[in-house]
Structure formats: structure tokens, C-alpha cells
Length: 230
View 1 (cartoon, rainbow, N blue to C red):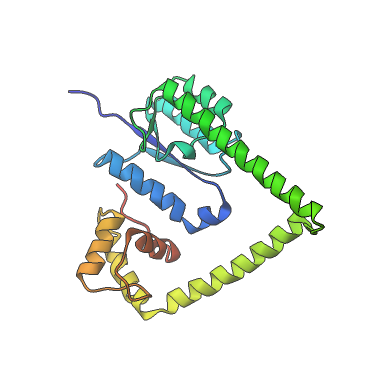
View 2 (tube, one colour):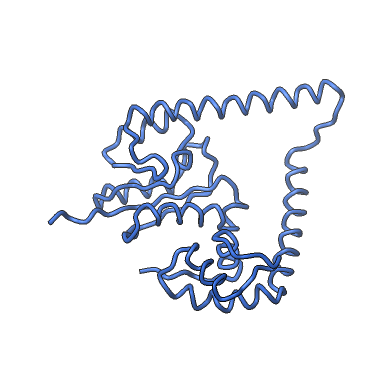
């Protein structure tokens, strides 16, 4: 009988907003869960970092864990790992086996090519952004202090998020659904299965709509409900 393969999951989101909301992470977990079916990763590492940066301590920890345990690194999507071709090449030269759920057939040559394309696209975005800013400045527009603008935007975003969370928490439909989710979360169910159960029992979202996996994930994270875990 073949020895059961172990997996170490690596998840990445580009911004703090995605990291705090859990939506980007939950989608990646769902992709990995669907790919592995009845197998669960022995460890999970979560990184909140831009794909353009190569200094990622959580990824380093994940690779070290793979080496120690002989596990395979599993990533939901190729672009979650790296957009920098030099860094991707360094990973591919290691002995760690890597699986991308959205492209499981990818070999090392294909990954090098895709990494190069991803980096090229990222560089194009950077060039276009700089050109747009230069054109705006040439027209006499004041671009302002980026740090000050980001600070104001972050404060406004935090206030808006707090208001939305309070409205959602006070919504009677959400309250009823959350009570049901606390029970469903104790079972080994996917987000889709949870949504199906809510819909079958006649529950509706705060907008009066049927539940989807994304709305279930939002309620779970907003109410700090942990899902079943072996």
C-alpha cells in the first residue's frame, strides 16, 4: 500500500484588507479543499504580502516544513505564489514538490514561462501607472502626499467597514442564519454545503437573497465562527 501523501498549504493575500476580511483566504482554502477532497493539509501558512516582493517569511516556513516532513506544497493558484520570475525559478530549483490547484499539470518549463509572463504583465501595469501620473502632473494636477492620502483613505475605509459590520450584525435575517451556522460549523461541510443547508431550511441573507459560499464565508468570519477541523 502506498504511503499517504502529506500536503502543506500556502495561502497569500496582497493587502491587509483581504487578510482581515478572510474572503480571499477562504476562497483559496475552498479551492485547496476541493482539490484534495478527503485529505487535509498537515499545516497551513498564510502570508499577507504583495506578489512582487520576494521576502516572504511564511513561504520560507512552509518550504522548510515540506523539507522536514516530505510533504508537497499546495497552492490554490499560480499567481498566489509569485509574480517575480527570478524568485519562482529559485523555488523550482528546490527539491520541494509544488502543486497549483488551477494548473496541476504544470511542469517546471511551463512554470518558468508563466512566471515570466506574470512578471511582464506586472511591469506593464507599473509602467502604465507611472505614465498616467506623469501625464496628470504635466496637466498641473496636484498629486498630494501619498502617505497622507493613504492614511485618510484607510481611516474612511475603517469607519465604513465598522458601520457595515454593525448593520449586518443587527440584521434579523443574519442573526437567524448565524445561529444555524454555529451548528453547521461543527460538521465537516464545505461552504457550498453550508449555503445549500441554509437555503433548504428557508434562510435568506440580509438582502433577502439565497445564500452563496461567499456570503456564508462573510458571516463565519464576521462572527468568529470556526469551521470543523480534523
